[in-house]
Image (cartoon, rainbow, N blue to C red; front, side):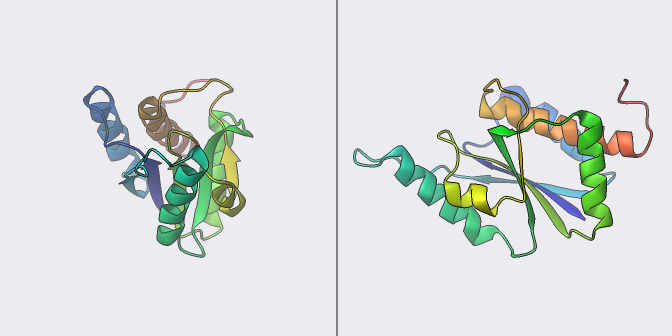
Length: 157
């Protein structure tokens, strides 16, 4: 299985880049992993939030394959623990998912068409975090899940 970490927004800011790279490298010991950063839709004087979300959704849909398993990060999604995430990832790997994609939407969220395409909608918290920090937390949580699945010492309960 390959894990793809997708985000709509600017490239990694320097204050989180080192951490993201470190956790991504750690994940690569368990799964092939890659980041893909999509440029946000251009805002014009006449563009609405809905227009922006539709444009960004179309961009994402153009890259998604039919059998990709899409996990959408959204504040209204289901909250799960680190051990539940570990089980979730292991179940996807055991069910022959070829590509597990985690998507962090744009500044205005995502269009309903992406929510309906998502196989799972996950919330880190009821709190809203800066997208750059969500990237770092996502990479860390996936690494944590991988270490839990291998009974390694990183995670403590």
